[in-house]
Length: 102
Image (cartoon, rainbow, N blue to C red; front, top):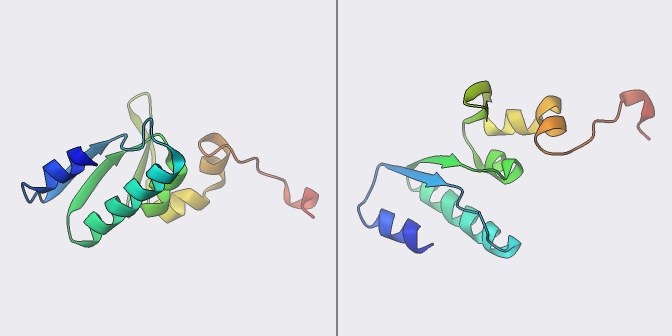
C-alpha cells in the first residue's frame, strides 16, 4: 500500500502494478483490490499483472491471458471470467457437462 501511495503522489496517468496481492492475507487482498478499483474510478489507467486470475478478471475492463509470453486470449474481464476454458484451466473450476447437472 505504501508503494501505491508513493506512486500516486506523482499524479500518474498510468499506474503499473505487478502482483499487488503477493504474500498478503485474504482480507488485505480484498482491501488492495478495492483501492485499485477506487484509483481506476478516478481516471487513472492501471496495468495490472496478477496471478489471482479470478479477482483480476472481476475488476478488469480489458484482460489478456498470457502463457509463456504469448497472448492466448483477450477480451473484457467479465467475458473472460465467464469463459468455460478460462474457468477450467485458470480458475480451477471443473466444468460439469449439462446432462450431469442437477
